[in-house]
Length: 450
Image (cartoon, rainbow, N blue to C red; front, top):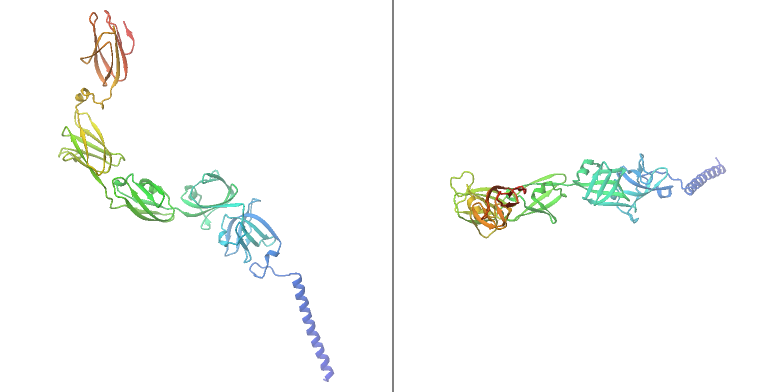
C-alpha cells in the first residue's frame, strides 16, 4: 500500500469519528431542549414540581412513610380514593404557615391541602390545611355512636361518614371511645370531625384501706380531690402520683403510686394512726346500755356498764375513748325514757351530763323529748271550771298540751250538771263543752249534741 492509500484511509476514519461526535452532540442538545427525562418516584434527579399539578383538600385515611404511600379522602368532593397517592423524596411537608415541618406531623385524620401530579398521583406538597383544626389531649368528651356525634368541651360536632378512629396507627374500638377512659386527639373541618386518634388509655388505682379511712379525702397529684370511696372508679392519666389522704382524727398519709396505661394499679394503705379523745359520762342511773354512732356512719358500737353484758363492750368507769369525730350517744334502760346526746371528740376531754327519767317522771317533768298535741277547750257558760286528769287547770277556756293517749276532761259549775268525758289524743283538736240542765256538750268531732 502506498502513502496515498494510507492517507485516504486515515481521512475516512477521521471523518467517521467526527460524524459520530457531531451526532452525539446534536442528540444531547436536542434531548436537553425537550427536557425528556424518565419519571421515577425514587429518582432524586426528577423535578416533580415541573410536572402538571392538581390540588385537593383531603383527610388522611392512612399513611405509610416506609412504603411512601398515602390513602386520601377528598373532603370537598366527599370521595374516598381507593388508589394510593405516592410520596417521594422531593415531597415538601408544610405547616399552616407554609413552613417546613417534620413529616411525622402527618397522621391519620389530619386534614391537608395537597399538590400532586395529575397522571402518576405523586404528591409534591403536603400542607396542614389552614381551614382545619386539631384538639390534642382531650379528656372532656362524650361520644354518641348512634347519633354519629361527639361533644368536645361542651361543643357538639358531627362525625363525617368517613371519619377514622385509630390507636397507634391501628384501628381502635368504638367501645373504648364510648366508655371515655381514653385521651384523644381530634382533627376536623368546621363543625365536622374527620379523625380521632386515641393518644393513650387511662389507668386506675385500686386502693385497699381500713374502715377507719372511710369518708377520707384523697388529693391525687396537685389538683384532683375526691372521696376515698370514689378513687377506684376514677380514671387517671398514666404517670407517677402522690396520694395525700386526710381525715379528721388520723395522721395525714402520703402514698406514691404509678399509674400505667389501660391497667389497674393495686395499692394498700397501712400504718394508719388514729387520734383518740375521751368522753366522761356523768349519769344518774346504773345498769344502762349505750349506743355510739359517728356522723359518717362507719362507727357503730354498743357499750354497757355491766361486766357480764354479752351484747356490748364494757364501759368501765363511765369513760369512753373514741377516735376524733362527731358522735351520737343514745342511753337506754328498761322502763326509762331514752336520752340522746351529741358530742364532738377532739384532743380535749369532754364531759356530758345525762339524766334519765322513767316514763312517768318524763311526763310529770314535761320532758321535751315527749311529743305533745295542742288541745283547745272552751265552755259555755264561760266561767265553768276545767279539770284535766284530776287536776284543776282553768276556768272557761284553756289551751292544753297533752301527750298522746287517753285523758279525762271534767267540766263543772254551780247550778249545772257536770260533764266528764274521756278523750283519745292523737292530734291537735278543739273541744267545746255546753252545760245545760240537759247536759248538752260538744263532741270530739266538733258537732254540738243537745
